[in-house]
Length: 262
Image (cartoon, rainbow, N blue to C red):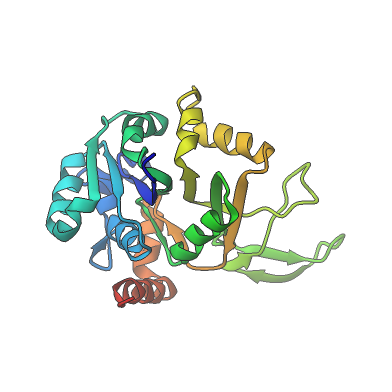
């Protein structure tokens, strides 16, 4: 029996990006530039630097622009890429089903969006998944509250302090008071034999169905980071990244980290 290769990646880049339509009417969201680099550059570069040697791009909205970008800026890596047209209005689960045959020679794959900046260590995440032999591994992040926090002593009505952009260590959900909760980063690792289960799922929200099914079997690991993480979902998010001095410095550091030699 042929031994399977260790890990591939699936980079979602086919969405229309309706929440940031001020920009995406002319370009796909993954090609929005942050400090002269498209969002997808950060994702691809981080994957390649982490040892992922095959990346699949299920194209959709304005996919030709993404394909041209890959052929120009990553021409030396094209042998590692599979660029597949999966349709403009295709649901994510259907995109996965369409590219599933390309993953059959790999043990697992990193599953990620192409519109999120993050600085956490992907090598560490991949090692965590492989070492613990999970079927699925999810990464979580400690969040920042941009809306502001009211610091109030329990049972009192007076404000102690008002803060912005502070880290929320954890949060609680109703009926889960004994558990810590973290924000899902959108970067996960999935064993390819889970594709058999994905094929059976009818719901658009396949992640909830899939993750909870394997969680019941205690086959889902979680790794929590306290690093830079920022999804570009709206024009406000984009403007914040461009103007906020703290974020600008973090992105500069991320670019240096990606460009540094191993």
